[in-house]
Length: 63
Image (cartoon, rainbow, N blue to C red; front, side, top):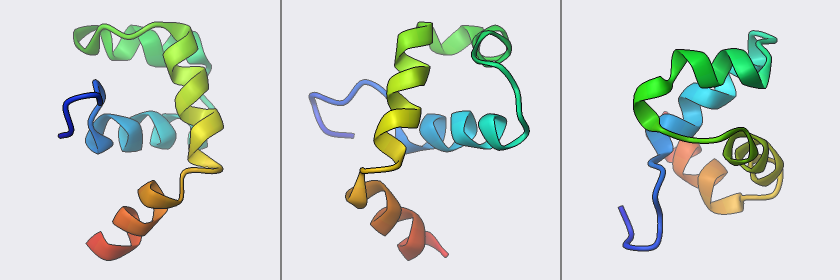
């Protein structure tokens, strides 16, 4: 993990998987209490997932 990153790709993938299951942001926040994130963080992960090429490249390489 790079020094300026605070959330790993594993957590991002888990949040994105919850979104595909049509869970609300508040539900995701409740299920991931141990991560200590806020609603805005979940929103930003969703917003950046559409434009973050590096994330998609890493996900494709894993498969």
